[in-house]
Length: 210
Ligand code: ADP
Ligand code: MG
Ligand code: MG
Image (cartoon, rainbow, N blue to C red; front, side, top):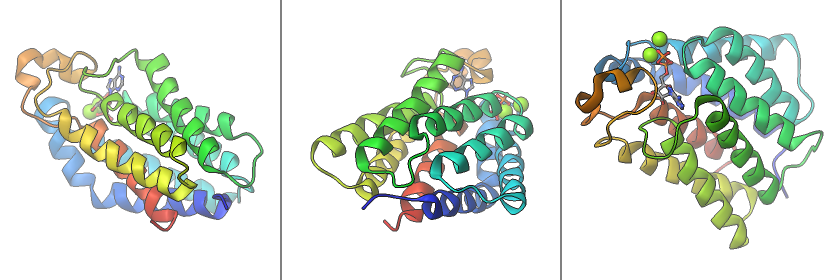
């Protein structure tokens, strides 16, 4: 049994709660190596997602993610808005009209999201960006699928790997985004976008009942 639209909507609602709860933490992380707005951007974006969800009820996971993409692109701004917008849109396209998302489809959607972020932002692993959370998440999801995991276990593996990935950004010198303006001084701080990615993927696993 896979994951349906109820999961997708629960995920988006939980994401909004998590972005609100971690707003200040994300602002503080971005204060150290950016312009202090990542928590505000993400909170505002996911409040817009919630608003859109009250206006229309998506009937597939793909439709829910498309709704989220549109809200994020129009409301988040900065670097993260187009990057997350592209991620959710690519994931939505990968899922298509499927109503029941199995483990393989989920891993493919995560890979499509990551590929969208890379296509848009041109960051490589190790550049100290959200890609450092997404890439291990995609790898862990693919490994879980190969081992016969179900969709919930795929999300759990992805969330865990994203959390580890976010921590691995600490010693890195930023080569993309605002933090790269700091050069060597960006080392010793965690990347805010990698942390928000880990929070969002953890929310996906929690919404799936893990
Ligand atoms: P801004 O930097 O425009 O203020 P945010 O603060 O909302 O935007 O988002 C910053 C985050 O965006 C960074 O922590 C990083 O994870 C991510 N980011 C920035 N540039 C890139 C890029 N080129 N590729 C991938 N992620 C990026
Ligand atoms: Mg910022
Ligand atoms: Mg900004």
